[in-house]
Length: 187
Image (cartoon, rainbow, N blue to C red; front, side, top):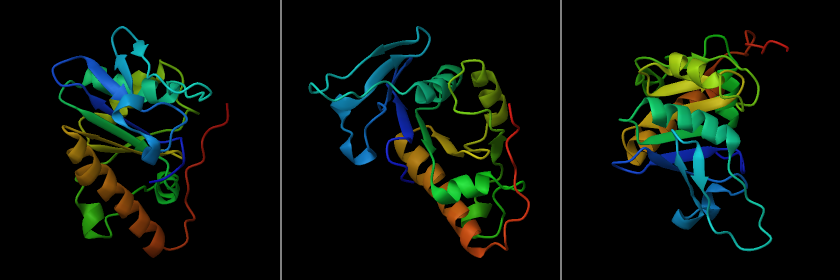
């Protein structure tokens, strides 16, 4: 699930409309509680971390667009994770997506799909992301990567993103040559 600084994870602060999101520029292993950015989703305002001088970490706009939409619309969701693993991106590029070829893949009764619109920086994409996600726990962002939500961080990580990533990896290692892929529309 490693794509250097481009993955993002968020967690709702219980009892509030605020959530914590990793900044752009940190690897997962470099993150700690004090480096997370607190967002108020409805006010679209952030309280940044106090980073050492010279470190130019910034808020993650793509992370805010995706995670903010989900946290604002789904108060029961406390964790959102988005990754760009090789297997996740490969399977997200296939027309059929995740195939029910392993127990891990069959664990998901439904998987949502969202067509590629470019790097997720436009606020109007939020509505389409939410429509596509519906009440699913996992979603493949076509030609982009994986996304999972959970009622807890453990739920989002262990029960959803980890298993989705495993299902994608198994699909890549066992599937016949990938001939039918989804190519994003040119703008």
